[in-house]
Amino acid sequence: MMSGGDWLILGSGALGRLLATRLSGQVPIALVGRKASTQPLSLTTPEGETLAHKVARITTNQAPAQLGVIHLTTKAYAAEAALDELAVCIADETPLVLWQNGYQVQEPLTRRWPGPVLCATTTEGAYTQGDDGVVHAGHGHTFIGHLDGCHQDLAARIASRLTSAGLSAEPCSNIRQRLGHKLAINAAINPLVARFRIRNGQLRDRPFRPMVDAVIAEVTAIMHAEGIEAPESGWSAMIWKVIEGTASNRASMLQDVLANRPTERDAILGPLLDAAMRHGLDVPVLTALYRETPG
Ligand code: KPL
Image (cartoon, rainbow, N blue to C red; front, side, top):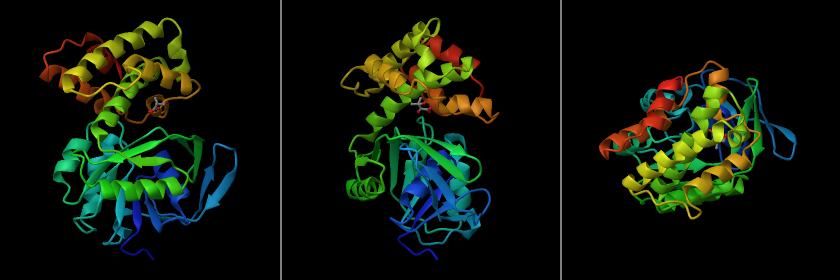
């Protein structure tokens, strides 16, 4: 039975399962998915060990009213509907952590959810395996913070729990900047690899390399206009480093395309195109990429 301090993970994709399996035994948790299940979840670690974890797997209407934290781990396009369905069952002021890629839901949910809303951005690599498994493909790092820089204590408490569970995390007073960095990475990699059905590392080769550079040039101009501080190494070096580090990955958008699922095109390219329009920037490469990427 869950009690008031429990964590609810809403969304049973790769990230939801990763959080659920890593956190099980550390904090009372439940994973909300489309179907309830009594099957344990299996976690395959980056070190190659596979372990079964007994996790409460419930549906929205089984969620208890009093919760410590909700981790929203659905894809960006499904986030608001999933939360609205849950909202009728739970206390208004429950803290929320948003784990979505892009920058589509962070601002509106921060403004409309009655409780504190933190945003998380992570480089943990994970993919689902069957109905009950998750492969933690590579260790990463997670930043957590409020868009306005407040609720640092809450962010620190959650980050510390995640770190104890083997998911290295830290509170962040400028999460908008971190989200901007991840958005730039996803914009430069995901639509191109999804369109050409290639692994991330193939972007280093012709004819793709100049396409990535062209996206980076437009994204850099948008980030500058938005006042998002560049990473220490610069935009281009940061993005090429991620391409190098994830060379053998099939990016999430490619996995969505291959599985005939909707993609996060609108969450990733939409906010960049909106920002370009607001600042009167001409972005032909991003505009064409948006048109050519399945939604
Ligand atoms: O975040 C990713 C994704 O696949 O969505 C990258 C960093 C591109 C790794 O594949």
